[in-house]
Length: 197
Image (cartoon, rainbow, N blue to C red):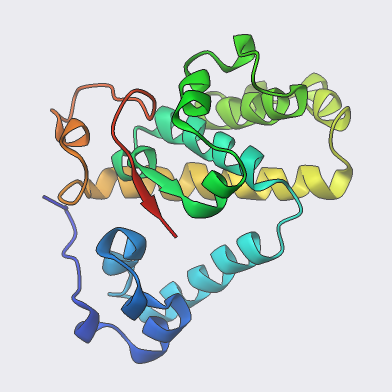
């Protein structure tokens, strides 16, 4: 059971409902916003920030989704690991590709740019002080400065809010595999997933 009470839609601030299109989404698509809605003004800012990251994205959807899922594994955010976004699927994210994230640096179906971005995301999630000149120079082989800034802000969003979502323990609507014991290490690969918009 979630550690923070989930607000029903009729308890949400109306403007927040409109900003998030919450009335047309499923409970999983409403995600942690069901808890954040307790603080509507802050939630509106988060919605604008998250929306800007997605709407103004120049990085490929496939790359962003691969990084998100690898970070989700390190965060052990069960809802993050269980969800597959439609735009990622439209960009070629298959379960076979997700399985490549078990050992991404050895995967033959990932590009060098994707591996560099995944490596950056992994370090950010596990040992951010190891992100040094070498890591940034490797990113520059594949991305310009604007794309690196976009990647870094996106990864910071995934790490921070993924960890927050993990502490909320929102598992009620997830497939059974993601409801396992809290001390069990889970993966986004090899488990049933849920597609959301």
